[in-house]
Image (tube, rainbow, N blue to C red; front, side, top):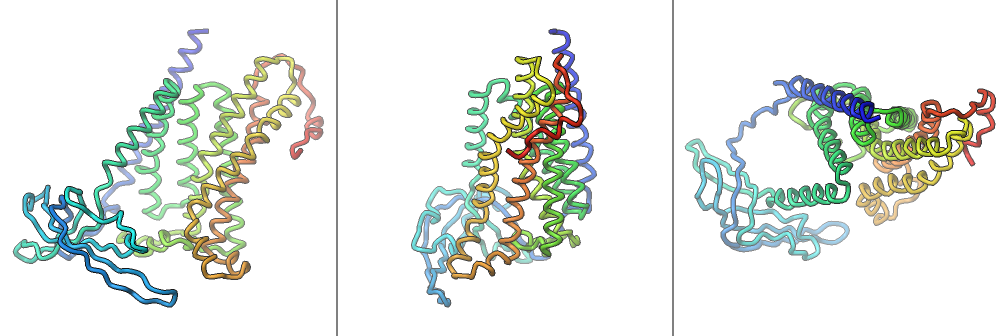
Length: 403
């Protein structure tokens, strides 16, 4: 038994290494010369600085139809801490237009704060102006990442380590394969489905090992995710969604690579990625439960096993569908507030491209998650080992899939 377990572990590690090498091989092709951003003609330098002192705060009131807002600019003395101008002190401006609405001052910079800034130069490389475009936030983010890693390792131990490795692999697959290929204008659906299959395989093999249980989870998850993408594609075309319902997607019109994107396809790709994590969760949990049931009750036939799997899946379905929908609602909360604030009629709200896209995103993802349950249950019932008597094909009609 120990030899078999070590053999399965070796096979799992080999497959994961193979998939990792596949990711690295794609990275060089994805990040070729065509991906480089054209250089700007304006002579500017991005650098880091540290605030020495606050000079003043200029406030202007901007009137509009709904009232007025404060447009504020903070002037500061900043010491440059890197690059060719390291050590020089410059006067820089920090626009607070959106951060200062309502008199909130938590975005004001103070002495000692590190900032990212753009320096504009003349022909003699002298600094003519400096603008701060962001405070340095990476230290807080790095702290949060470390805290996450410590907690997941402390609670999960070996399983936590495997989950952390799979998460790192997922990030690498998205950064070095998915995003560069999408920016090149490749088919969003094919690229996203391919990347999702690889991510699913690596994640589930790491968590569950190389066995039939993992295979059932992989097949069930893949089926659910593909179903979500196909449903989104059908509804997207019939509803005539453009894929340009968000500000971020509209900004793709102005990127320097001059690529003609399939914006509808990008919308569907986002739906697939958004549903992937939840589908993997349901697929792996359900497959594990069904194999455990079969191990404890080997006399169960395939029909009874599917019925048990469906009962377990229904318990997961309610909370997981809520999780997915609430995640999408949280992402479009400002949009919903804007629509409500303007007292738009319900028919106008529903027919808004952005709102309809978010509804489709959440419901198509939830449908994919729900379909993962019967797909995983069906596959797992065939892969489970046991001596139970199997029912005939016709008896599958007796299963209550909806109750």
